[in-house]
Amino acid sequence: MANEIPDLVAEVRAGTGKGAARAARRAGFVPGVVYGGDADPVAIQIPFNVLLKKLKAGKFKSTLWNLQVEGHDDVRVICRDVQRDVIKDLPTHLDLMRLRRTSEINLFIPVEFINEDTCPGIKKGGMLTIVRPEVELIVTAGEIPEKITVDLAKAAIGDVITISSIELPSGARPTIDRDFVVANIAAPGGISADDEDEAAEEAGEVAAEE
Image 1 (cartoon, rainbow, N blue to C red):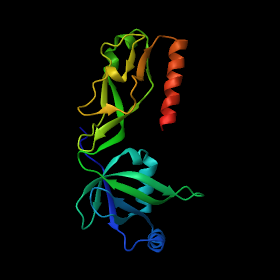
Image 2: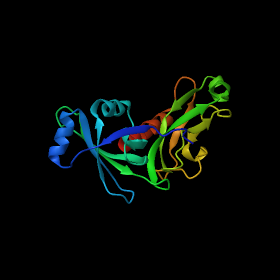
Image 3: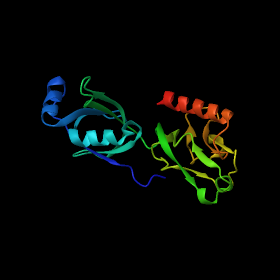
């Protein structure tokens, strides 16, 4: 399981509406709202530089956050929307949704490949071709895996590693119904035309999903 859910620190925003939102921006904050979870919405604001740094780090909308707001209990949230300035492409507002521990959410989970140094296919000159460095899974908010692991200890040249061959954490399941390719051990000198076509198709699907 993930060892730690990252914190997202915010302040309660005084007032609601466009006037209050503009005041927050002038003061160097990005206004937002927290809703859901059988509780009333709360108007918040996050320092602009803090939010921009997290957005630039990537995966902000696919990360589960531990929201800390003074005067309120910590709550797990996921970002549902970040509105941006149409010209400068900078954040102007964000929507956060509260989650229960049993809530199901879609998150991109990193794939870790182990035992490359002892992999028979790689030792014979094959090359590990990673089609999906991360996989989108349906997980519960209270059971988020830090990663999924692919053991290459017995992988031979020509082996194709699909999602069905990977042991997923308890309660996690792919968002895609079919048995898609995660990686393969390509033959020395490059992959075959068939493999190349399949890898291209997978890459296109990954781009489409994003």
